[in-house]
Length: 388
Ligand SMILES: [Zn+2]
Image 1: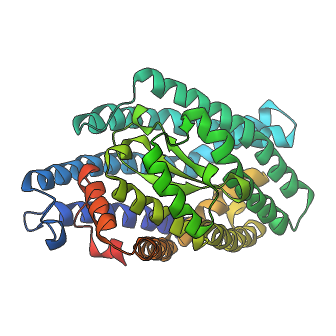
Image 2: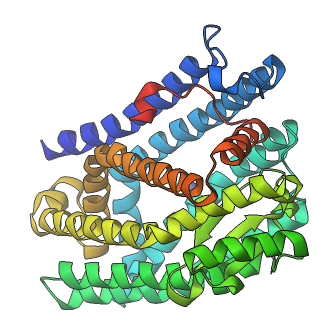
Image 3: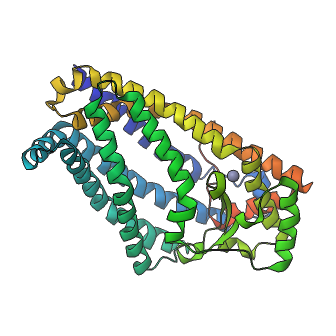
């Protein structure tokens, strides 16, 4: 019985996600879709067609990836996980080593299967629309760096979590605590140590722009050393800016691709990012995700404690039982994603409002947002369900 409940909920989530993706594409690229009134002054019919084709190409790839993923997951749930549990148990007596091998095998399979799709996405789709600047050399070194970072951070974390599960029958709160501390640690470490492995970050050079930024920063008491320009153009021509880090690692990062924008436009985007800082959005998101992790891990723990999984899927080791429990609980919690999207959109509106108030005008922000939408070929008519 539980077997069918498990598979139905898992498939329901996957198929609903797939339906939404296809529905969004059909809605946004239908012949009835028009350029929204506010964009008419900046976006031509030709730009609009191009953005629709871009969405079509990306969605088609996403659908193929998703279908492969569903098939593979079902194979793993029914046969793969029990098989690999037996395999790693025969290789070593050490429980932690077994767990590391178990998750290591799946990460490797996942990585290898997603590789051709990643290559296609960057070197075919992004290339076709003129965004791609990633060379094969950058692509390969990025992969090598990512693997090394995952190993350095992942092995100690996973070993610690496996040890907690094995040594304490009521492991859930220790498990949650470690996950939360790890997330905060990564948020702090990422801008200072991880991001610089992939990109160069340098201070703004344009003196005139710097002066303007300085006077803006004084208004919000943001330390000046924390504004960086990133060489994003080595991978893409897309334009962006973001706020990252916590505590002393906090910084605003501007893509070098934004430097062709007028000073007023850059300032308005910067003011938007400062809005995220003043309104403490990163801290709020970390608090929110911590609460989510606690609930999520506790539910996983309850399912883990019941005999349902081991008697249904013929697995006996805690690392495989917990994996099934995680898959099941995340299939259920997937349905709260609209809430998370709603909150992040609320934060974006808050930051836009902040930028407008700080600069005393909304014109440069509106102009730069329109440019961002146009140049990044963003979807002009997303499915209303996505806008909730
Ligand atoms: Zn924002």
